[in-house]
Amino acid sequence: MSVTWGTMQPVFQEYGPADADGNCDLLLSIAQVPSGISYRIIKHAPDAFDRQTPRDTADASIPPLL
Image 1 (spheres, rainbow, N blue to C red):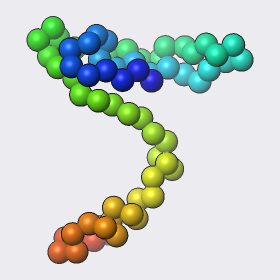
Image 2: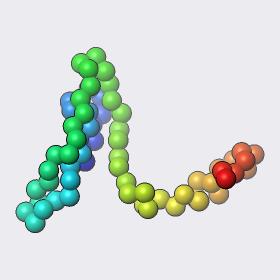
Image 3: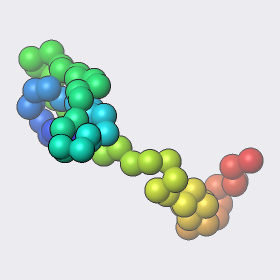
């Protein structure tokens, strides 16, 4: 995955898994209009996070998610 900041183009690119030679196929490329700006994108696998941790450490006055 390519991560950019500001007005760099393309804003976002995603690549498939690397083959035996380390080459990856471009799966998706997103650009923005010339006057637009982007923000950071970091993609992680869903199982990379413990969903309970933010809930356990959040403000206790907020009702828990069902």
